[in-house]
Length: 434
Ligand SMILES: Nc1ncnc2c1ncn2[C@@H]1O[C@H](COP(=O)(O)OP(=O)(O)O)[C@@H](O)[C@H]1O
Ligand SMILES: [Mg+2]
Image (cartoon, rainbow, N blue to C red):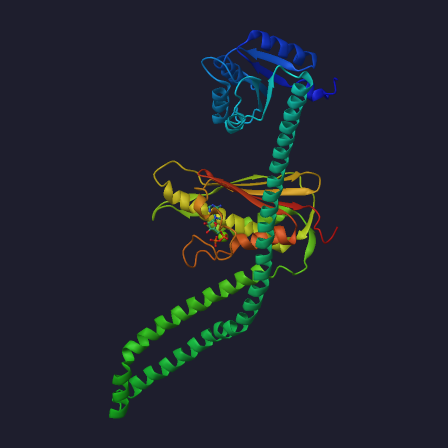
């Protein structure tokens, strides 16, 4: 009745009984069936054998001196490594077999002596099948869990993408509405300043030509505190000018952020884009370390043999600009930090072809890295760790939108206390074009 299938034939069974004859009889039968059999004639021996090599199943005598089968089983259940091994209890018919106890201590089944061979084999096979199914179930559960995890991540990414696209449209609207009125102010501020200068000139002329004003005029001069007014007017104009410039810069950043639908796909040399962006940032490559000392950022380029890339060229340059600016910001901070130590702020720019149709551009710095605590918020619009006027918090979300949203690429980073590397991967041909 050798109906067992191949993998079950190899199952490793431990037979535990204090009566050697019993062990011999059982193991002969099991060996004939193709099982691997190990033997133990006491509870202690059994535990040792089990811990050395975990068996697939244990036939365990209940009545043994020193340590009963129940105790052995209980010990097995208390150890994570052995808790799952199926145990079939062996008991003499005249034993007062406490079946309830057998199951309570974690037994899977029991058979009574003298053995009915067919029954023993059937019960063994039954337990092995259950064990096998359980393993399969466990594997499937694990696969399911992984699939669910994957789904959750994808969903989170989708939501993030959705948010950014929605925000892009919203920001485009705001930038558009603000642009005109701000331009009125910006455009009129300078002629208004000129007019005021003219009026001041006129007042001064009055003062020299008519040094003795009438009492009514003198009273107004006192009331408005003319000297203070003249002095304050200048300052006031200065700060209005600064304020307007800042608003214009923010609006420009917002427009760049939201102008993601301009169709200017064209074939370009990415290296030209990188070089011209670096040129724009040239003035920032010299860092003021102390009031008297400066240091230069070393730029190391490893340009690969890239094909001409069809992309939204201007926007891609914007990404280079954002990432390079961030790297320079980080190098500035690090230079301040390492003031006393020998430190060479360095920027690495590397390009290469990965896969057939994908290119990778990486921008790396040896700054201080990105603290763990803020990593989750990095791509959040308006999230910045920089002081007012220095950072807008739009650099990374804009870059993400351009690389992922517009080019179907990926924007990832690696960071450690030795620095940060951002990697852009995009197809050499834009999705819209191909
Ligand atoms: N290379 C980098 N090294 C360290 N921190 C960085 C780097 N790039 C970005 N960051 C962090 O990410 C934040 C968001 O960057 P970004 O969106 O470009 O906005 P901003 O530069 O205006 O702050 C920065 O404020 C900074 O804390
Ligand atoms: Mg930035």
